[in-house]
Length: 266
Image 1: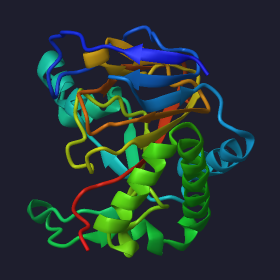
Image 2: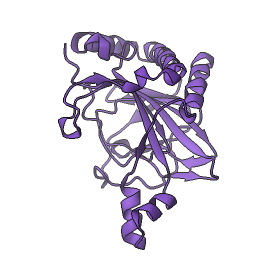
Image 3: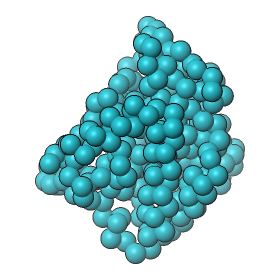
């Protein structure tokens, strides 16, 4: 497979700033190399078995079987300020954004969540097919990491075993999963993740442009085509999702993500 050598570059992007539409620079499958080490990879097409599980998971996620949290990001507030709209009016003109978390959920006392827990979605009987498909997809993703990044697979597996209580594990390499519907995340860094680890980002989309992952440190934007997978060390640096442009009312760009959080100590 082609190797893309990444180099640090200066930029003016800041945490929390919006990631406007940027044409993707990475549109082919490749291994990602930085400082002489493979730190991730991008595949434009999922292997058949992983594609099968992700298709089931995405269809369930889009259905009413899976409970979701509705997100109101800065878009609503910006529309209120810019156009003098009420909150209800701004919501009506903004993009619906939703997410569902599986696996471990860290304590957040300020949100009245004083203890670590497992996502309540696991207790929802209607979500059983979604959960099973996501777990199977996670295992298939881990096989790809083992194939393309064997040293990373072994070190991350060992780290999870040493640091994370078994009940908070999602697969062998992760603690949690989040599925996002039409979320163009602003620039951020996943500082809550365990260091020296990678995330898995699988994309499902229909009739949309944009929604690519921009990494300004490396001056690259990953296309994230339908049925693609990006494995990347999200703890390491700033990244954001470019503006999602929907071509019709049924259009969507979903990301199904597996990630390893720090804080589920043994």
